[in-house]
Image 1 (cartoon, rainbow, N blue to C red):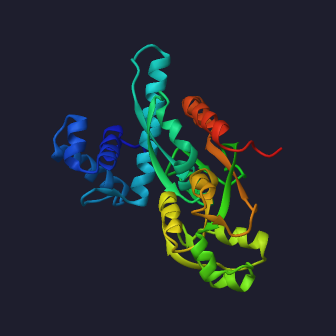
Image 2: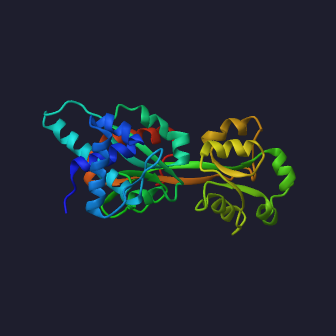
Image 3: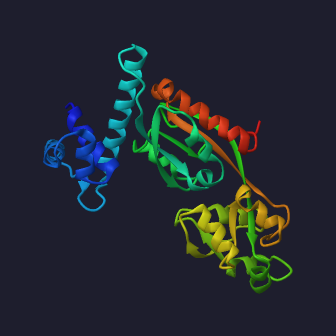
Length: 295
């Protein structure tokens, strides 16, 4: 079976634009033509590819096909450019980045003069790599240090976390001595149900304790705001809370007990030449803002 490039382009345009009308304008065809191309692709594959709504959302299969279409378009532009048959063109690539990296050090990558615009999917550091493993994205940053088959795995450095709370929260929930029993009761924040960062810090400092998860907030900035509001204790990237630690609004639960998380850049080796400028930008941003890789 081969995939029709026009139908794939219509699917990618709808998902990227969020509506059939905007996708039609981007492709310079009618909304009806866009809808027909996607319908024919769905009929051929026997799969629903998009959930019609505002905005249009891809199904799991649709997301994988969009990632494939993005890679094909980027490779085509790269090849044409190398042959001198096309001028500079900007394509689009989907990547997965852990939320703490995006909030604390990744943003300068977006200012680089890259040949791709990026669609960034957020997850926590232990699961962002799963998006690449499923084929939903073309590259990923996460804490997994083992390469996926066919992929490169390049160390970026370590992101340092601190376990913190407000002085008032510590006085209310923990008192002068941080004991396992107190930590088992004190509410903690979590990114989502798969977030084990708080448990990892507890295990390293006090033993195998399950944190009493209060709010789940899928945002690094919301973590900081909620912790400053006194709602819970949490692990936060050091760059995001440096000022609050310096002026006393936040205090480490146990002084000088950081948790360092090693981060890695994963991408398919066959896309190495295409992704080379993006890879260089990621490594440069990491080198200026992360701690050097161990070893």
